[in-house]
Image (cartoon, rainbow, N blue to C red):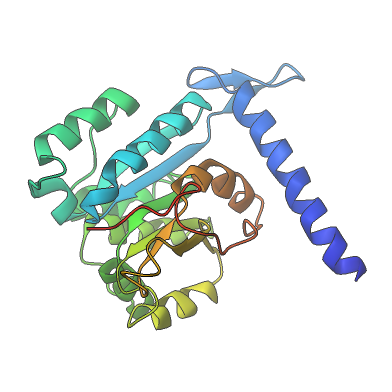
Length: 238
């Protein structure tokens, strides 16, 4: 019982500490309360092809920049090349540059140095499609988003996944289960976005991305991990 009570308290302390640190970071280097230079925390932010979630995900990219993080954007081949009814590839790239000030990494050659050069303190895949989850679980790294994640993990740093798949409680469930048991992998809280019409569909609560990252940087999984819908609602994936 004591351990159960300490768990939520530890998470709350971790989130408060991480958020205070993020607020002190200004410019490339912030000045910590003690007066010493503090390197800005760098987040690899990879997007894969759940196109209907892009607007919500970009809002969280903006939120991370406002909190003082340096965001290194990465795009899977599909996310970076395909035009859809939700957004053109050109518009997506323009939004990313506007938000982060950085051109997205969109090639395998560009993603490979992420680990060796220690470019990221934490790596986020949002949205993380069922296809991407399956490849991660199977050790297949054939897109910039996945190779970036693999390269980042070589440094024993946290990888955060924000699930978005219509098959989360179907074939993708086994891959989510496998990844939950991998060291240094954390999940943004997720739930069923449309239990009646799409009972197998799962989507992350993207509004929890900043808090999940803050917790992961201290080695803590954000709890509760299961939520209803996304951002307090039940949006429909297309």
